[in-house]
Length: 251
Ligand SMILES: Nc1ncnc2c1ncn2[C@@H]1O[C@H](COP(=O)(O)OP(=O)(O)O)[C@@H](O)[C@H]1O
Ligand SMILES: [Mg+2]
Image (cartoon, rainbow, N blue to C red; front, top):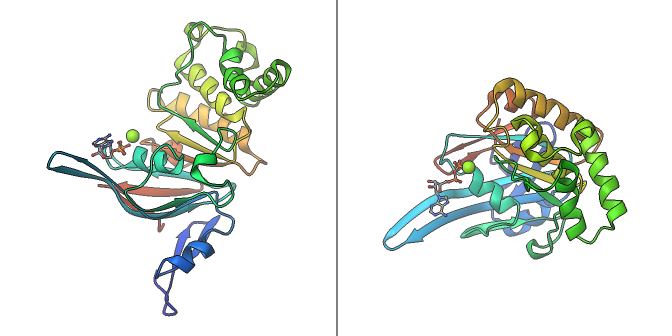
């Protein structure tokens, strides 16, 4: 809502409330208090030849520690585009993205922002625990540190018993839980998940989210998940809706 004193209030449910100045600049500083990531009038346009496609138009939103946000919208509505901007994988063609609690885009680390995609993308020759620890090893952790963190993450998502199995020996739900454990192993501040249960049936998707949210309980890790699955969305605190590139966060 726009208030008479010239500020706009964006209410993102119980845990996310921000004040922004309608004129922009001063508001960005205000909106930044306690935000992991904030988009201010962020847009993303694709151009090729004479054709222009607006993937995202003027999105303003804030994600704070501990938020659990479902990003809901039909295919092609701009969900992945927004997640990619929030993860710093892409830059907006208008407006701004900022990470007040994390730093500048080019300094974002996997330990701060973790991504989970629709396909688990596990490396076939590596066991589950090796898949989880590989990014930690590449990030400079010692073998002992990486193994401890990987086993801890698998334990938090109730997968200790399949730690030594190869991806081909896992069910689709187990493989996706390994991908979730790989994200959790960093103890990130923000997890961005793009239709992580898109390949799973309702029951398996529900179970994955139950253990995932259980693993996050008591942490201040924020989770933003793009999903078509309303049972998944209902497990989150807040739903944001996307339609034709327009984000609606007032709910
Ligand atoms: N690399 C790209 N080049 C051109 N258009 C794109 C590209 N990526 C996405 N788009 C377009 O932007 C819109 C939003 O896409 P996307 O964010 O992937 O939606 P969703 O994740 O909700 O399915 C779609 O119309 C899509 O075709
Ligand atoms: Mg998508």
